[in-house]
Length: 244
Ligand SMILES: [Zn+2]
Image (cartoon, rainbow, N blue to C red):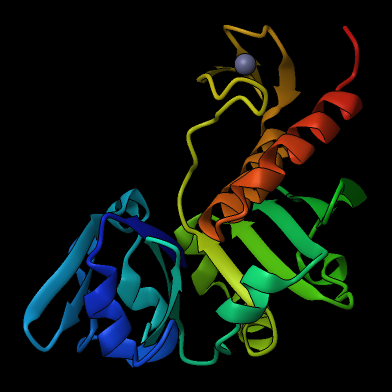
């Protein structure tokens, strides 16, 4: 799971890491305190951030042991690493183009979208599968595997195995709970209409699971500090939106 902190004392974090990047122990310099994440140096807390993802998910399920910290201007990117996860944050933030695999896994199906984001945004692949495994095809460049998956599904063997396989080599970003549906165009709140969602402002209507995939791709861009690429993704979304 990746988090972006604002308003931290960057000087203290740089001293802690001995530079702009480092891997630290969870429990020592990065701590999960109920539904918040804190960064600590030898003098005490440097920064604290509440996370709704931790409100609904139990961090112990993932066995976070280490965390990667990357300074990005006056922001700090923190990525919690599970037992088998490789430290890849630096590569993920510099990869160009960046491949984003966005999946929405629910009890019935896996809906996915694979994006290539560089000086442009491209939809490489899309579909619906019964399971995650056939949809994840590594590509040159950094693959970011983002999944919105109900937390109870993670304990089911086939899915857990997939995460363990892929986590060693790829940036795995987990969203372990429902994301509130947000409009890709205006950021407004989407209202549920059965399996679809509709934006009260733009009046666009999209399949709920497909909208979730786009939202995941946007979220990872923001967390990695690539907000400047979000308009490209939005433009692509509008191009692909079926005309009413
Ligand atoms: Zn809207």
